[in-house]
Image (cartoon, rainbow, N blue to C red; front, side, top):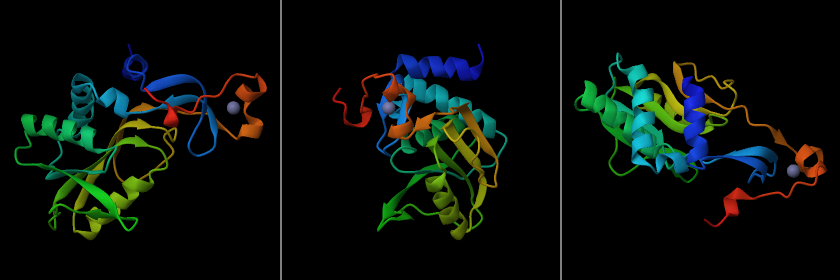
Length: 197
Ligand SMILES: [Zn+2]
């Protein structure tokens, strides 16, 4: 089985990937909904995904794995753990947070000049957060080794100007409510963001 199909199967089994008729928080309607945290809540899948991304950067020198909070933290830890066990003894896993809407390092985290960093995110949608993390790391004098992510929902369109390694590319169909073919068929709409589980 191709990696993409194998992972899609896991996403469906863990309810991370749902099919149906969904109203997204952005206001668009879609025939699928993806919540990456639901696959990462199972440590064996977090470990698997961390290993699959980590092994692609195994030949790189990496001083720190850095992720935007909150979505990127779990997978960054899994990747960092894999690399640390393989051959990157001493690497750090750190994360950025928004302070007054600007991406920042808090909690005593820092990046030293000349350090090589791997930027990690769970899902690439517009790539905005990752670009901000890259900017922050570059401003700290770091060299960006690449970007690693579990899922690219941009259909592969987002370019960071550095090596990008993604396990699954999803091309999620989005419609305005007025143009939604599922609404036209009269299929009841689900709001997964407000769902109580
Ligand atoms: Zn609809």
